[in-house]
Length: 257
Image (cartoon, rainbow, N blue to C red; front, side, top):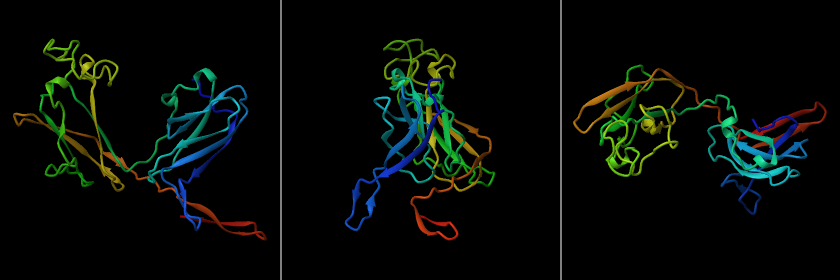
């Protein structure tokens, strides 16, 4: 691991306005922040990660601030981390090495592995139980059916023409191929392409989901998930200011909006 977190402290974030009104109010979007920190690493560069993703790096060992983009969503707090790295590694994204703690979410992601043995023209629809324990198959959550293999050209193979008409490969044009999907999850690795669908915001509760696949002949296959607990995160404070300070009692009152 090349990221060093020790001896880095006082990490602070300052929201940068993109416009200021005459009376002093400011426009915050697009959301950018100035990140400042203290570090004892005088011979290393520094990298900034926002919610576990690489956001920027310093250009020399003396720089202790950087402007980065931050998410525009107010659904959850923004996690900002600063690490020291060797100068030769400053341009490398180490986000895969960062352990991101569990964060509550009010959305559910469904990942569907589309194997080669699924029919061309087959579609998928997603349903859920709305917290009742009984899945409602009369109304799909997705607005339009998910097309699994829209064309035979999408299927994978070693060559640019029809080859080994089986799970070993069909056609290489416009294919996912090696190292561009979840390799090894299929029978040979070509079956590694995935479809991801994210649900709309859901209230707190326990839900079950189901994926129904329909082929061009009208045959149906259904797969249901286990129970999934949805816990919406607490909405972070958008603006924090000092309302008053009683010097006699040393009591501080904050104004949170």
